Image (cartoon, rainbow, N blue to C red; front, side, top):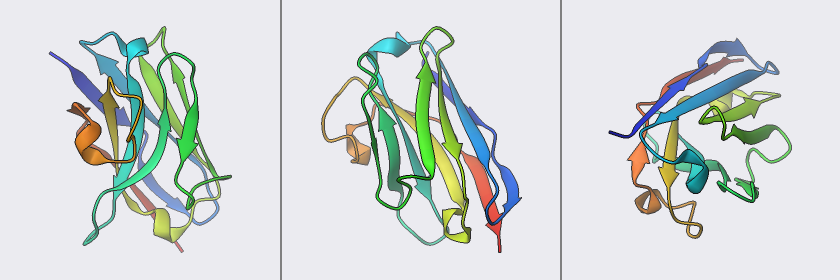
Length: 124
């Protein structure tokens, strides 16, 4: 059974940093692309950042480029999202997702597995 479990969310102030983690089990993690999405109240879920399983190529939403960094440790089956210079508009539930695909990675329907999410709240 595949599981993705996010952790590391919390309440922080504008300008602070947080590191989210997503621990994967039940799959050959290094073969999967791992991606963070987020969903703010009343809004649709949106792509944040992705990292391929083998060549570790990354891509980011324009809104987080230069502030967020995605990385992974395939030996530990964990993907991270380092979030710096947080803004109130970063407030959302953050979800980890995994797919065997290497294309169309900003689209929710490309993903086979999802975590339950972790809440990030940034106060002004």
